[in-house]
Length: 85
Image (cartoon, rainbow, N blue to C red; front, top):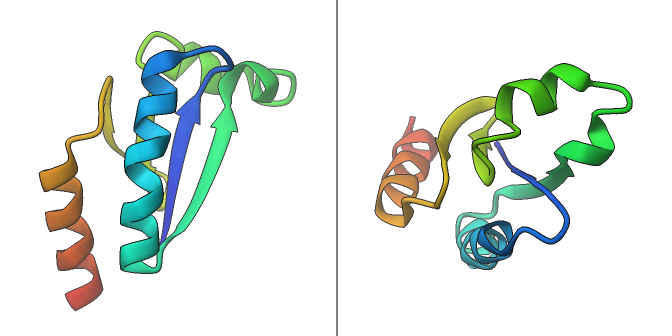
């Protein structure tokens, strides 16, 4: 399982989201990747077109989980459910 944070350089909400995600990913032993959507736009312009106004965006295994801010209780519940499946 992988959690991906779509973010942007200089985004304070993205920095907060990353700080929230790091300990959760450690706790659940889940890989965390961070993608800067502006840098990624050079090879994947649709990514920025789709999510540019929503960042930070949290994806679990590529599927959108939430955006704007991390819903920590919901994320924990979803990770617990996925690990039990």
